[in-house]
Amino acid sequence: MIHAYDESYLRVARENLANMLQFAVYDLKKDITTFYNDFIGCGMAERFGAGESKVVAGMSGVELTYEVLRRTTGEECKIKPTFRVDKTPEYWAGWALAYYQWDKNIPFDRINEAIPIHEVVDLYHPYHEADIVKFVEVIDETMKKKQEQSRLARLRAYAGMTQKMLAEKSGVSVRMIASYEQGAKELSKASAETVFRLANALHCEMEDLVI
Image (cartoon, rainbow, N blue to C red; front, side, top):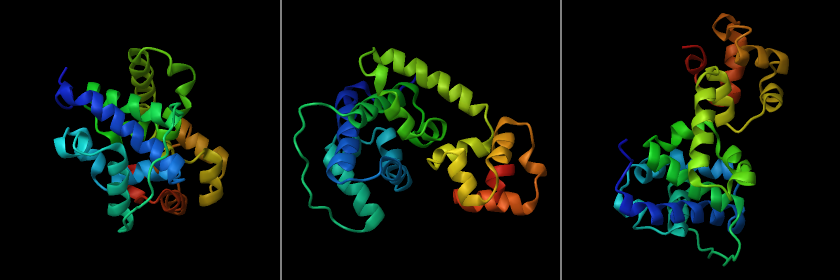
């Protein structure tokens, strides 16, 4: 298997991604889903995942956070990190994700479509004490299952929404959303209004749901 970049960068890459998430959540009080989506959307995740030395090893986790904020808000952050003895679930999530992305050479955005960052954090118990190989197996299986779901389910998960949240935002019932995601009903055969409401709630194009 061809890894994402040279293994010599892996240790520092894992530490940097871990520190980035921990700093963003605990010191800057950022919502992890929003911040991680910004990390992906601003282009830093692509550069990190490609093993660009300036990004993957040339910046600390804190500096990565600053750069994401600068790219997404245009503002310079002056807040300094708080020293922590214990590693948080968010730290572990970044540490584990960096390994998985390197090992499988899969872009961060594709991984996030299958298993959003908040779901990775939820895996802290019990996998933070297990070998990283176990984490890789769990993510592999999750990605396989998620890839078999509908586009609607993937886009909803990527947006960090439950079916109930999407129903409230779109006006489409939870029962209908579940039916589309499970394949009991075909979204491509739904009314244009239904598809529009779902797409609008998910901030995507109607074509993203039905093509």
